Image (cartoon, rainbow, N blue to C red):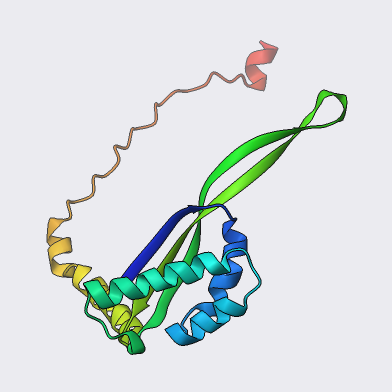
Length: 165
């Protein structure tokens, strides 16, 4: 089973947040909390708070055991971008982009959850395939293009004998 926690519109770019997300992905909760305590990044305390929220969701709402939890997925997706201008020389301006991101943490207590998800996708694809006999029965005969006959036009050509006359 999976438990989610999402934090939206965090004022940090997704590119910078993904650096810390990569550090804690697939780790146990205890390992991830130690890594986030020692990470010297702006997003580390935000991710720690979000991770604690996800653990609370898992234990209270889904009756999972806290010691068995691990981070199934953690992502930092791009959010909205606020655009501001900075005046420059000769009346021009540069664009300043203040980026935001959406952080998502997914926890699981089953170590084989990823394999089960992959098998579920494969079986779903197999079920989606249609029997070829049904497809061939539904096919309509192809229409042949109409072939037009070429017009029989004789061009008037002169011969040498006609020119001399």
